Length: 100
Image (cartoon, rainbow, N blue to C red; front, side, top):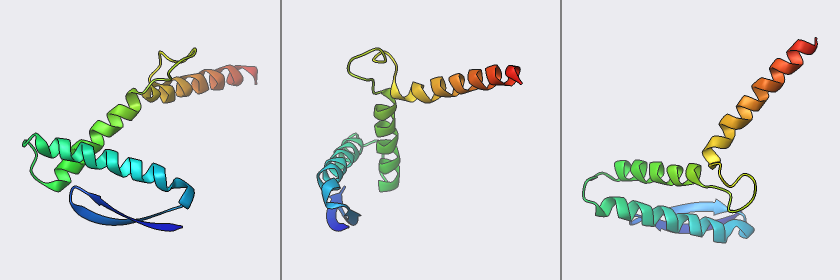
């Protein structure tokens, strides 16, 4: 593991990661810092804790709204996959239950 020192919203953090993951970690830190700065810049949220929560919600929403760029599943948001998989598992459970 490698120690990586970063700054988010003016506060310093020391993180650990594998050397091969360092670039991705630094990109994630930049994304979080930029999102938190944007939330802070609105002037509507004062405490760092609330800024972090609002930024986390926005980032989670981004992630769950992502869609595959091309292909047969490009119309389905990432957040919908779990529901679809759960529904398929329920159908399989019911179908297998009738075979007994």
